[in-house]
Image 1: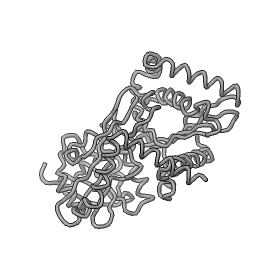
Image 2 (image 1 turned 180 degrees about the horizontal axis):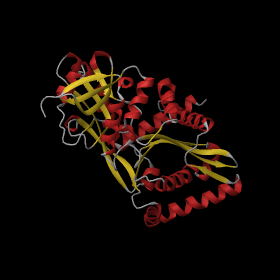
Image 3 (image 1 turned 90 degrees about the horizontal axis):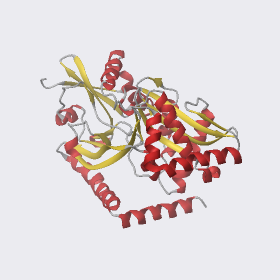
Image 4 (image 1 turned 45 degrees about the vertical axis):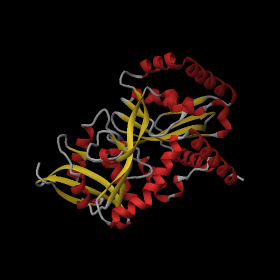
Amino acid sequence: MTTPRIDVVHPRDLTTGDLCLWNELHAQAAPVANPFMSAQFTRSIGRVRSDARVAIVRDGKEPVGYFPYQRGRWGHGRAIGFGVSDCQGAVVRPGVELDPHHLLRACSLSAWEFNHLESSQKAFLPYATGQFTSPFIDLRAGFEPYENHLRGQSRRFLKTAWAQERRMSRDIGPLRFVYDEKDPAALHTLIAWKSAHYRRTGRRDPFTQPWITQLVLQLADVTEPTCAGVLSVLYAADRPVAAHFGLRSRTVFSCWFPSYDRTAGTFSPGRILYLRMIEAAAASGIHVLDFGRGAAAYKDAFKTGDLLVHEGAMRVAGPGAALHWLRREPVRAAHRVVRDHPVLKGAAVRTLEAVGAVRGR
């Protein structure tokens, strides 16, 4: 392939042909066709962010790939949906090799930052400065073999979960699980729970940014095969006690926002919700359930393996790239030091909890 022509458009200006080709290329990535890499996710970001862009890579006049991103001041770019997207990179035809420097110049970018780059993104991997596990569940054989795996891995974990389910049903009321709930009130309840959790633990609440709330509410109504919002809710006595909102493609379910009613916390409703959700996802054709980057005890209990995602930034030499390095790398390096040292990490967690306690007063 000769040096490709690259056209830059806002996601709303993608043609029907572009959307069809993007979805076709996305589907070819199965069983790792993550919904965050779909055309629908980028289009949804475009509806809530004016800085969203898509670089259309062409071989002659024919499109052969798409590179979604957000463009900020001084040509500083970020992966599309940076901060909420759990899978990032370009979607290109198999065999097409991107020249990342040519791509960034065509996009008028001095830097492009990512924090959930998937491992198949060979053009950008050399610029990764950190690597993280993203726990997942292999459901290709269905739920029953997975349940047998859990019994062998941690029989106590599964036994306790089912016992808690029976106890919650007895003490609160009959349980009802809805895999794909369409009641907007349930989604607003989940957002309120999640916001309270972020504040309580001293972490930044993404829902204070209007575009993120708008994005989630919008994606709840998306039902495309390559990207659909799925709200799963566990009810007890007809009141929600745990909920989760995620995205799915035909074969991949990406976990996103889980939370629960703290008044029912002694019953571990989140654990029960996940077991029901995993079973329903397997029945609906899901092959991989991706928990996303980040360590958590519940992820370790449920997972069958780990995917890898990467963070870093690619820069094109110049003043804009130097400014980006000065703004981002010292902070990234400090975070890396804290993450890699248990004592520092523990101190950071305690500090966040103290901040959360002050917020909650």
